[in-house]
Length: 264
Image 1 (spheres, rainbow, N blue to C red):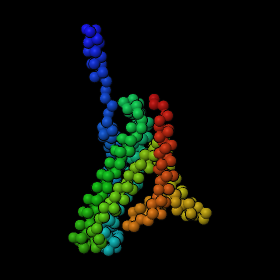
Image 2 (cartoon, rainbow, N blue to C red; image 1 turned 30 degrees about the horizontal axis):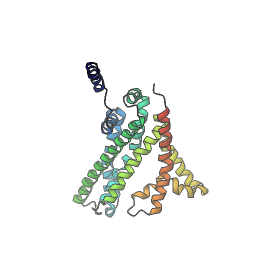
Image 3 (tube, rainbow, N blue to C red; image 1 turned 180 degrees about the vertical axis):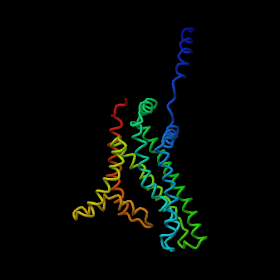
Image 4 (cartoon, helix red, strand yellow; image 1 turned 180 degrees about the horizontal axis):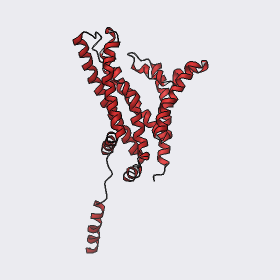
């Protein structure tokens, strides 16, 4: 009886000293901090914010007065998100290998899929923040336009329109992360992310027999339709098909590569 009690007492402290698995919320917070703390990530975030502010005078002085609606200002504020947020998504994946932090990351969290989920969740949270920042910027710009008599468009900002802006921002982030996982190299992933869709768009416009498939696979066309007020079921189908090719397939390939790549 005494031996059993002693053995149990000795086993209990060792069990208590085993580190608990970090929750997904903690992992997400860590990944957000890693995106913000690096010099490249910090400057990308600053440039996205500056782009939103810089686009407001362009709308105020270049667009027709009746076209200067609140929704138009919001759309303009998201240009930086569309162009630069994918780069942040790429760097969030590839920096683990270029900065040689993969060893500590995947040793502390061996379940690599949880790290990927945390990265995608953290990036999506940043996308939501920039949609909110763009909304505030758009409201301020529309107010300036109203006070100065420069703007005469609608003040309406439907929830559906705001939701579509958020959807496009998250898609941009996820697409960049997918390319980062598929190629595992920052310069290569960034170049191919911008070059491949551009080449496909050009070929779809120049080659006659590619115009039909381009209507389904050209993200420049299919995703721009999402921002319209009335999106048909066919346009949603085209957007989904193009995302299957440019987002889902690279992400699946990237997840396979990430799960098999040796950490050293």
